[in-house]
Length: 332
Image (cartoon, rainbow, N blue to C red; front, top):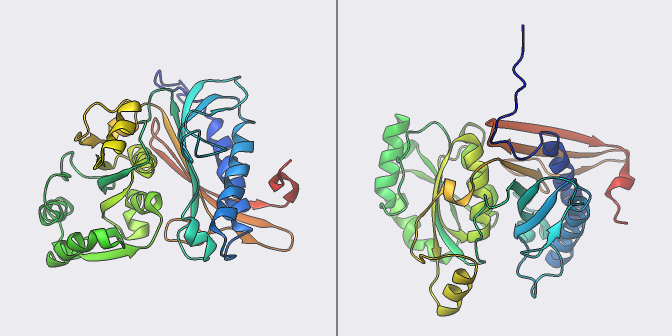
């Protein structure tokens, strides 16, 4: 029996880099987890940033951060436009959230992760650090089932019909924010269940990639635009659907968006416009959650759980790591 090992012409990123990205998010997650429950969000975030930056600079890539910790004058490391890698590999664009859910980590609450996406240059949306209105579902549905401009009731009814269930059997995830009070009220009227989360915007959307594991069918609501790009990258790898619209409600926000290449402030972005081409997404749990287990510290071993998505193959891998050489987690 022969096996077809030909490389797709769309493949920009070498296969081995998937495992290299696992190491990047593992290092960031372990560094943050050491400060889990200590009540210091900034220290935990900085630990994750330091570890992720160090590992990225070891990779054989010519990389540029397009979604990061902020703009150059706001973030000392992993800022938008920062070059990473040893320049000995493909030109890639990178989106990072070294510690998604800083408050969750500081309070040792469920759902904190270290997450990043890598794609060919020009394949990830340059999203300003503003809010984005989003809607997302997982794989297995006809295109066009959901629409950001439709009402919550219409979207839930359409999704229930496509799934072959009653609206009351649909589970929706929404961030627990005052701005979502009206949305939550409208969703409740449909009879479907709602899971509210306090933080973890990226993980919240990624929940939709595996509804059989997470119990989440639909994501609705307003969250960060950079987080939206990361989540869209993961959904694209499994054939999910997502739409988003930037919320540019001040002149200052519009100017920033125009400076990053946004031409239509009211544009409704499809998933493929936020993340296209050859994309790899990697996330490692920091605290226990519905998607991933958190880092476990034993006397002689550190345990991690990581999920890796790749768009070009539609592959999802779960990697359980047992690390016995602790020195690799130390910063130089």
